[in-house]
Length: 252
Ligand SMILES: [Zn+2]
Ligand SMILES: [Zn+2]
Image (tube, rainbow, N blue to C red; front, side, top):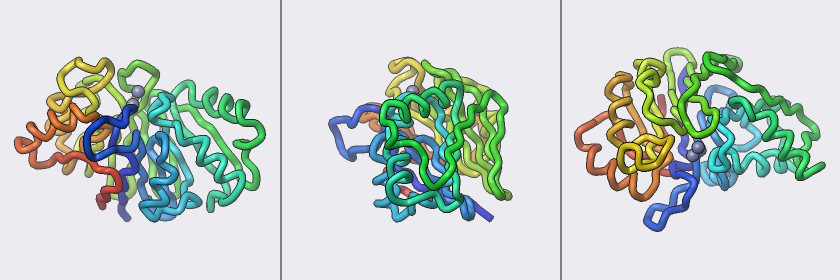
């Protein structure tokens, strides 16, 4: 029993001007039969294909919040499932904070009928602070985090393996307790300095959460050109942490 993470998109909303060009937020986790996605920003359905992960294996999509860089490719997945492949499990569950249901309903209404489910069931469920979701042999817990929109962090556990994804958040000490001793902490890092980008973490703050959580390993994700450069200067001081790259894989 374990988990395997594939980074689909390690970038933020802007493509940036440097190299590498990073896709917006998207992370796929293989948990036995399930392929669980944490955020699905623009272009990440094609990133699944590039990473040789079959979209029909996707059983659950956990949205941290409804900003477009985190859910912009949801229409691509729903259109694919309507017109071509279907989820193997016979259903797709989309989870998210308050606003997720309205988002999916609005997308379906705008594109009617092209995103409406056909040949499978689409379930949209909203989670609050402390909410839980379960698969065949895994559990996800949600934690409310401070951002510019209602937002959740998630902790996925399968057997002895656990992964925590912060999603977009400001610094909040309680995230370290939520991520306590996890196998891998996927922590956002969009801001190059403290408070330079409202609602986001700087490398210093991200690494503070890494240290306080006692996680085994950490990847900094949701990077901008500036935050990636600033983080690279601090990373030599924290051997557990590295910068995420698109299509990077980690066994947990
Ligand atoms: Zn974002
Ligand atoms: Zn956001």
